[in-house]
Image (cartoon, rainbow, N blue to C red; front, side, top):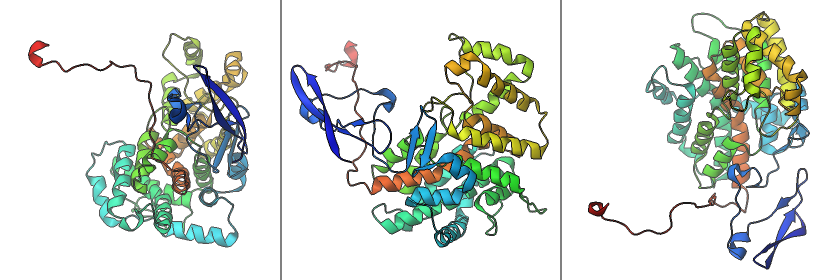
Length: 430
């Protein structure tokens, strides 16, 4: 990262030189690390929308152009030509694997899918109506109590073992959280199944009869995992990095990421989208909700349209839409009222001047919620499935951060607007 230019900042007649870094892609970055020490001032950036907290080689997003790449590979190519575990390898190690490397990696992940038998008792400590995300936060955090041989973040080998364990066991934990919530027995992982098929089997099989995973559903689930694998420095990834900067063990860091992902503005968006479609109910009510969405004084917002980062099409949405069409055709539910509302909303969004002017195009959450609903998942499982997919992204970012020689504990500053120094007043005189 060569420094070839600088910017001059003048405060009270005194000038300060700030280096400008040029990335391989994206806007230039102004380096303000020494600004406080030199000028005794902070910068103010609520939401960190203009602040780079790290450098990274993993994922790049160009929101204006609708581009998302992992290690330089476009997401649409990966979703169409690759599969989730190959993308996991790419994110973790930087390059696409050879046939031998992929076989070895898939074998390792497959052999780590079971969880410690005693961890089953943790699930029984939750109420049956607990949200699966609440269960996952607790169980993933508790993994550090069972896997002591992979909690030392300073040991590269232990970091590697923890990475494999988390990727492998997260689908098992999510499926068990689901099974527990509906009162069905846990289904153990099956080594002969691929990653996505194994997850579907653990969610929908029962001991009383055989269950065969439909390849179309398995492919759709694999695409959902792939399209959600990483998304640069979003809220949950930044949470994982911040927790990691303190030296916390990997299971605690990922549990923190799951907790952040739970928010409806982040990982809960696809659940909120499907709930919105059900609230609208029928196609004839769409104009009413469109008008409400256009009214600035109305708190109603259309979920599943537009994106915080993408100011153009969400590059993941096109792939997800193709999967939605395949799944809905397989399940024979093209006439479902919720689906009809979704299709009409989609049509309006692509034709209405209001949506086009504000670039409110259907995003990945719009289609993923429809797919998961068609598969038979309740809305409470949408975010846990997102967590399964995003685990590899969190781990890749976690590993990259720990290898960074510039690593420091995260410590954001603030613009303090409270009272100045005051003397304590005894309670008798208040």
